[in-house]
Image 1 (cartoon, rainbow, N blue to C red):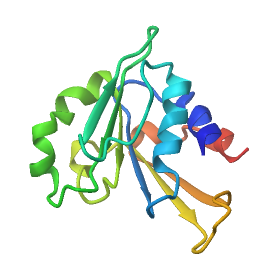
Image 2 (cartoon, helix red, strand yellow):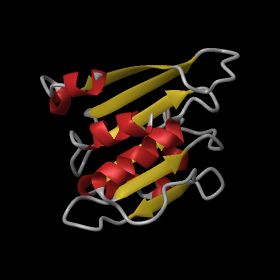
Image 3 (cartoon, rainbow, N blue to C red):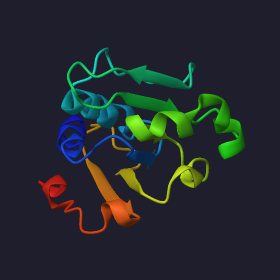
Image 4 (spheres, rainbow, N blue to C red):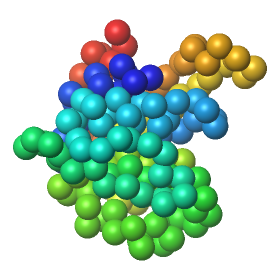
Length: 148
């Protein structure tokens, strides 16, 4: 998952919204950790479950990473407004775990990553990932490098 995040980071730019879906323990935060490595951001990328959102500034000239965990949020975009994601989005890469049904109104252009882990998989190794680009930004974006 971490390697996939590093590969995905090469395709991302400021203004991109990435929604991550999957069961608990599927690898959403691990994928985001790889994104942070690939984007070259400061700080250890850890789950923002209790703080809801963390901002990781870029160590270079790339965009910062805004990492959100919407698991504990029950409302839609109204509840998310306090996070000012609409303000952060144009200059950042915003990754939202558990964001499905909550942040799609931010932009028509988004990347939805669904992670499936075999139920009862105690080895914690096998994942099946579906990456779907939505909107003009991702039309013909060439997501092929992610399938390696």
